Image (tube, rainbow, N blue to C red; front, side, top):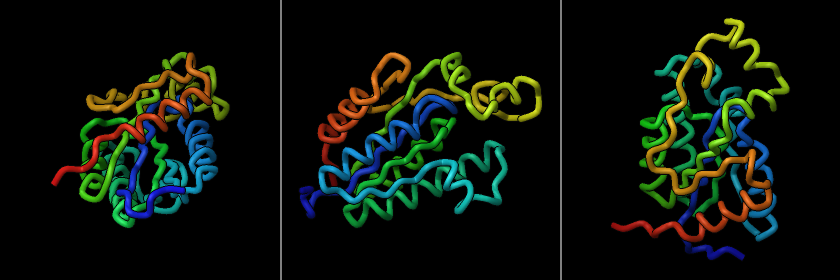
Amino acid sequence: MPDPHAPGVTVFLTGLSGAGKSTVADALVARLEAEGRTVTVLDGDVVRTHLSSELSFSREHRDLNIRRIGWVAGEVVRHGGTVVVAAIAPYDAAREEARALVEKHGRFVLVHLSTPLEVCEQRDVKGLYAKARAGELPRFTGVSDPYEPPARAELTVDTSVTPLEESVVRIRAAMDGAAPLVG
């Protein structure tokens, strides 16, 4: 059973579309719930539908979306909760803003799913990469819009070579090994 007095934690999974964020998030949440934790999940697609539906995919709006996710995660963490975020979050500065919002109240573990673009395209069941390459989806991350790899990821996992269970084990270790907040 988790310590009710321990600070909350956010695990922020970032990577290209098709990198495995939702798959890893689902497996991590199952593991955490099996350990007796209650987990709040902030999936990028769901947040876009319910919290950020008015936003476009401009850089300004993508950054605002990630700030919103960071603020919500920070509020859950402030009350000792555990949050798992699964979002492309293509820009490093916005991820660092989310980190700052969470670290006011607890721990932030940034996990970069560094799965290569070619693998992500092969996994693309929705055909988004093909549409982006055909010019039908402007500003598509990895094709016509950049993805900035994190400068300060606590963990990097390539899901094309790391099995799902091992990915979860590595993330749990990173969660346990995160330095406590100072000040």
